[in-house]
Every structure is written in C-alpha cells, then in structure tokens.
Length: 325
Figure (cartoon, rainbow, N blue to C red):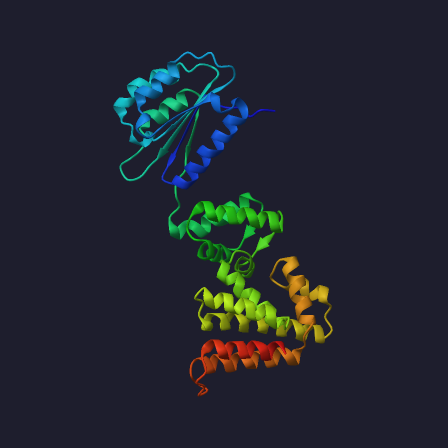
C-alpha cells in the first residue's frame, strides 16, 4: 500500500542533520510513488517565495502525485507570505509541498508560514538540538521509545563514546536495540563494550588475546594500537582490568560454578560473555595471577622505575610473549 501524504509539511529547527535526514527520506518516498519526474526542488537562490507560489499555482498534466520540495525557508520574511498564503490555501488535491527551514541565530521560519501550513491541513515538525548537558536524559527517553531500559550512567557513557550529535546517538541506540532485543536493560559496562571507539575496541581485542594467551593476535593488536598513537599507560589500564575480570571468572569456575552460571552473571552481551568464559577456560588462576604480575612490572618499567634502558615497545612485546607462553 503506497504511503499517504498530507498537502503540506514544514520541518524546521536548528538540528540541521536531522532536517537533512528527513528531507532525504521524504524525497526517497516521493520517488517511490511518482518517480523523479514528479518532484520539483527549490533550494538556494531559487527558493524564493514568488517562485514557489508560482509552482504551487501552476497547472500540470502529470499523472499521479506531484511533490514540491522547498529548502531554505528560514530566509523568508513575513512579507514573503503574501505570495505563499493564497497558494497554500488553494493547493491542488494531488500536490504535496514540503518546506525545510534550517534555523540558526536570527534566521527563523516566519510564524505566518507555520500558520499557513497548519491551515492547509499540513504537518509542522520542530527538530531542535538538545543542550549537551541534557543529552543523557534525551538518550534515556529515546532508548525507552526503542524498547530499551538505559541506565543513566550508561547514557552518560554513551554520550562520552559517541559524541554529542543526536543522529549518531540515535543510530547507536538503534544498533543496540537490534543486537540486544526489546526489553534489554543496558548498563555502563555494556555501553563501554558495545559502543567504544575503534581504538577502544582494539584495546579490548588486545586484552582478550592476552586472556586467551594468543601471542600472535595480541602482538598484532598492540602494534596497530601503537601505530595509531595510543599510549602504553592507557593500554595497560585496559589489559589489567580485563585480566582481573578473567581472574575472577577463573576463581569462580575453580570453586565449582558452572560456565553457564558465570556467563549469565557477566555484564556483557551473551555472545561476548560466552567468548570470554571460553577464553578463561583455556587458562587457569595461576597463569592469570602471573599475567597480572607481568603487567604490573611492565607498568613500573615503562615509567623507568625498574632501571631498564629498553624502550616501551620492547618491554611491552616481551611482556606479551611471557604472558602468552
């Protein structure tokens, strides 16, 4: 069933990225209904009130719905509405006009355009950016709409990882909804695991390779991270944290807990938990304690505390080899 369109739309606000997305989506829908020949676009210097009013009033012999897209109405003044208001009031039944206003500073859509679109039975949407300090609360609300329960600390971590662009935050939440399913409760550790930056994900890859005693994979990940400019101190923090988590799992397994029980208790997605427990099962408590000692020694040596004259990378690669042995 083809989508139903109203006679007029007005999408305005200071969230320019979101407005651009909505324009692209509307154009795609319009092309699916009437093809590209049924779309007229007014933007830049061509998006004058007189030109648009003339197009709205023009007779057409085209078959099917006609779409007129007008981008830049934030530049219009109240005086421009003298041409637009009568044209909107007399729109042909098979015509849809969509106005887009990317507001900023004094550049605002005229109130009379908002009123005229509503009077024509159209839809008015305001796309406003959220203040940075309000983004975590906004993310919680968006997650709820997607069927997720996002902890406030997790929301703050999401903003820290992804940034302050609402479109990116929403895309990450949509990915989480697809991966975790409706009703999932998401805490900070899951956000750290699932939405980390490329460097952070590679840091976890390095740490997991050390837990699994995969020397080749750990060496490769370490060298790639160093080429990207990652500091050894930051990598050691991630590695030590992962090794401590692994030690805890190993001790629980040794005490008689089943792998299934341990997996269910871990604050990570099911597949990640299964992989992590499997890696831990390939080592033991003694090996993990030794690995933590090696990491502590490496941290001391990298700060010059052990009297070593070797470079950081030489010390780190030697530590990786010893942990994986």
